[in-house]
Figure 1 (tube, one colour):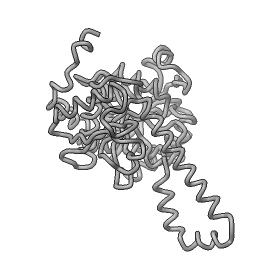
Figure 2 (figure 1 turned 90 degrees about the vertical axis):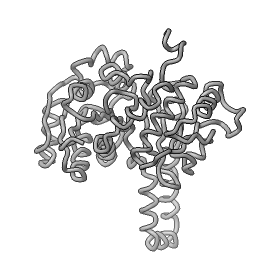
Figure 3 (figure 1 turned 45 degrees about the horizontal axis):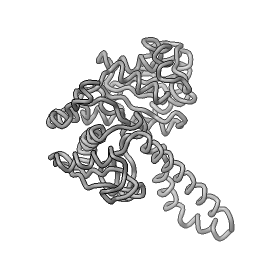
Figure 4 (figure 1 turned 180 degrees about the horizontal axis):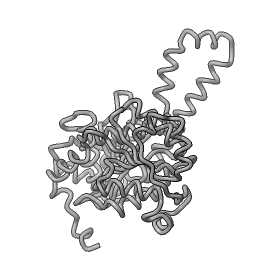
Length: 351
């Protein structure tokens, strides 16, 4: 691990840019004082925020650009308009040049994935990146991927997600052989599309030493913590993520309304508010903010675009931990150990 963790921030990314990015990074800095920041974006906006956070200002370097990727830009548009000039590209490029250890952005997901893939390139044997995040469950935490980096994929793609996800889980959770489940519409072997059944056959036949494949899991099993790693393609993974976040907010709203209805419920809340505070914290989506783009030759973290400063701080924490635990090196080692499993198929090699 380097003496200082150097974090490149897209200060223009997200719904409001620097007014969330800088305060959020300052919160994370208070938790991880061995951090330095490279801030890419409009200097005037960044400096206005840094004046309010002197500790953050002392460990930051500002690189001016007035080009920002819009949240509604298509990936192709973002590459045309923002290649080599936008705050998002420059943050990623700092990782490529070795000036930063990790890049973090709350900007356009599709643009971030396209720029990261174009600039950093993919790891050998990996054809597409995946967004992986730590998901709170009833029995602890699980790694879930892909949460929306790419749509669709065959059995070999899902198998590679399983290998990368298990590598991440083994490092973060200190597990020798994480359990892996494939998200499906049922646990029976005959259910699901051809690609997920193919992935199941591959994982069973390969019997990889670094993961334990446990079979299909249904959507309600994610929250139960049925496996250390839950694998799915990006379309269904993103739906599962947004559904879980919406449900958490809905439950919180139901509880607030119920506690305010009668004087008895208000009194009951006073006696149980510590328990309700713990529940609220557990249900807060901001505390699970920060998805890692796996499969790249560099570390990139995606934050929710509409998060607040506290939520962005958690994304910065994720980036810090990825570097602190030398995750990229350890994932590379695990992938190389199973090089034959990750080699492109004949069809992929031709394409």
